Length: 217
Image 1: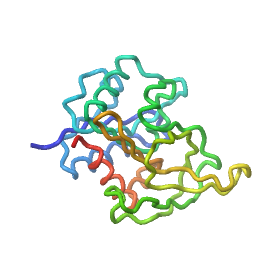
Image 2 (image 1 turned 60 degrees about the vertical axis):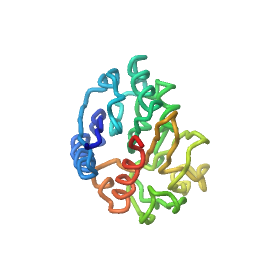
Image 3 (image 1 turned 90 degrees about the vertical axis):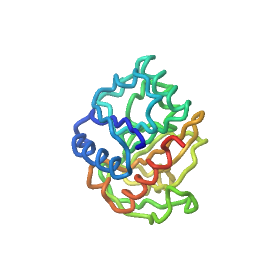
Image 4 (image 1 turned 45 degrees about the vertical axis):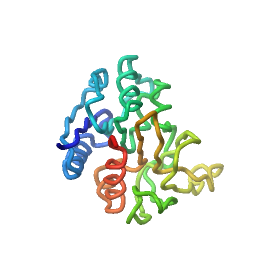
């Protein structure tokens, strides 16, 4: 019996949602998931406990974007019951008016100083099954500055150079992490501004192994 995944994608057009959608559907099917893909955030109000994994490639258009209580209850309740949650990039730049959602995800995007810049992603936990065979890699992207939960288990990180904000020089920012939520597992990668970044071989492997790890045990 195949595993089931709900894949939510869409939102702000700058993150190429259709390309991200094609990537996510293809990767999930490659991993053996039966995929229900949607661009309707109100699907989160449904009973989600029949899924093994919920994947978010959604990015909000407005900072004030929120979730209804029913959406919060549906998502948080499903993960607490054992459904996995995973996603990339805009997952922390969504529903920022929902405190419960931010608590679940473990981080919230606040800026990307310098816009699209080159930087190095370093793997910091090489013993985790998500990072097995994954090497550090270079990317040109929105280098997310995030407020992150101290309970996250960090898998990868990047360091700010101080350009164009000198006061940020030397700040180390998590780029991928895991966290528990009840019986469920959460995985996030900050990389993924465009499908090009999603397909960087090391990052694609990180995502594939992260999605598989997060799915219901």
